[in-house]
Image 1 (cartoon, rainbow, N blue to C red):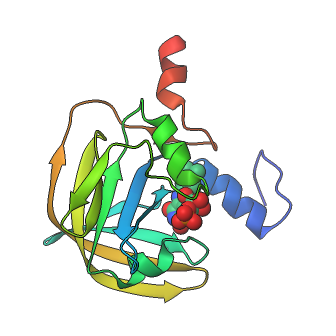
Image 2 (image 1 turned 45 degrees about the horizontal axis):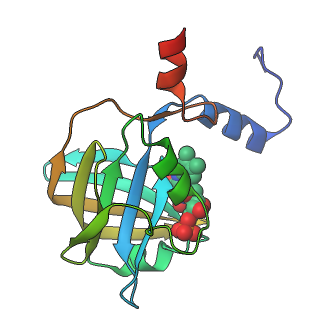
Length: 167
Ligand SMILES: Cc1cc2nc3c(=O)[nH]c(=O)nc-3n(C[C@H](O)[C@H](O)[C@H](O)COP(=O)(O)O)c2cc1C
């Protein structure tokens, strides 16, 4: 096979190729059956359809938010701003109370974070379990937009804009 970068196997090839695919960073939230909010950082959010406006996200079965997201009628998608790396790290982690110290409130039964570049309240149109993830399709019901630049994730880093600014 041609290729300037050596890879050991198919998994390596996949992981390295995906690390080259730059994406935005989102926090996806839902209400658990016990009434508590849950949320995780996700780069799998992509635009799905314009008619109706809908998005797609892929949630690991290992996420503690998985069951709530796969069964709730609604979930929230927050697209993060470049200066919200700390928020991304909280929701990428395994803290027991990710919401303490975070500005948030209920939008009906969806936890809505303050700030962020965009908030989209989605109605779950589909959840498709396959392999170790569940694909969610969410129809956009409502939301809001703020000003700013997006947080970008590529090559396993979240500080791309900061790095470009110092060059
Ligand atoms: C940049 C980044 C992107 C991520 N994207 C996803 C994703 O799309 N889907 C997913 O299930 N987990 C994703 N994760 C992992 C979860 O955020 C992480 O496992 C988190 O601890 C899950 O929290 P929970 O168990 O409280 O739900 C991502 C992590 C990072 C750092």
